[in-house]
Amino acid sequence: MSVPEEAWPYIAITGMAAATFLVRFAGYWIMSRVPPTPFVRAALEALPGAIIVSTVVPLAMRGGLAAWIGVAVAAAVMVLVRKDIAALAAGMAAVIAVRSVGFG
Amino acid sequence: MDASRLSPPRAPCTFAGMVEGARLSLPLLPGTLVFAAAVGATSAEKGLTLGQAVFMSLSVYAGASQLLGLQLWTQSFSLAAVAAIVVVTMAVNLRFLLMGASLQPWLSRGPAGPVHVGLAALTDANFVVASRYHAQGGQDTGVFIGAGLFMWVIWTLATIPGHALGHLLTDPKRFAIDMVMPLTFTAMSVGLFRLRRDRLAWPVAAGVAVVTAQLAEGYWFIVTGALAGSLAAGVLRERA
Image (cartoon, rainbow over all chains, first blue to last red; front, side):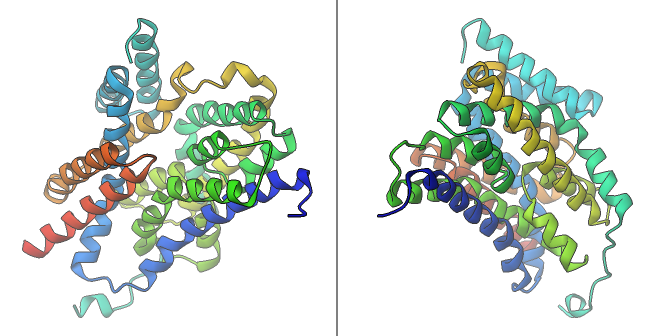
């Protein structure tokens, strides 16, 4: 193909952006066309938590001991002080500490 | 259901709400700065110019997918290489589809124009901020939009020092950068749990996600787990 070499990175980035904007709008548009039955409403209400659980648990499993300890520390700090920033900082500090002694 | 035929009340969209959205995003700022810097550093390592790195953060604005897309970066591009990068990006970002769906019943009651600006800025940050705000009874769609725009600017700007710092930040495991998203989500999940509603959804989501993670590469587990958990909540409601 006669695409100039220096254009390729921009083509790739534009493709990534287009794909991402598509999924950003698609869920909203699809739900605009689905009738809000009790089933659909209950499913949507539970969706944010389900997304979070489905993200955290497998990533923690892949991350091993350090990740589990980090998640536990972040959750505990959040329950105690209700500050996201403290929970994130404590969780990251725990991960770094556990990794620095050679785990995970 | 007759009740669902009644047009629901409009949701406001105020400037004060946008400011509130930015304010509610502040706790996510340190994690986002470090993550964006890591993406900028990886861009430099993969041979992107500063302009290309900033263009990517501005136009894609989705950290995990940018990191994975950059892993597939090459010096000898072809259409096939671009297609692989685009497909991986979409797969990693499919969770946005579910996030947009879950916010739709609320956002659709706001003004369409601003709401679509917010959707253009949809990512983990404004999703968790807006979900929690709405779960606590908040109605102002400006919170979703303001949080999204604020983090979009921060994300794009923070790419620049990352690109300059380069090799210092390219290993995501250093400084636990790879754990920013799961740890932020963990903190956000506290207070989101409702026993009656989630007692089936959360275990189902976790179980399906874990099994998927064993079977499939990449981030498919977020999509399968979230869908399974959400459907479980729907089934539970129908039986109640």
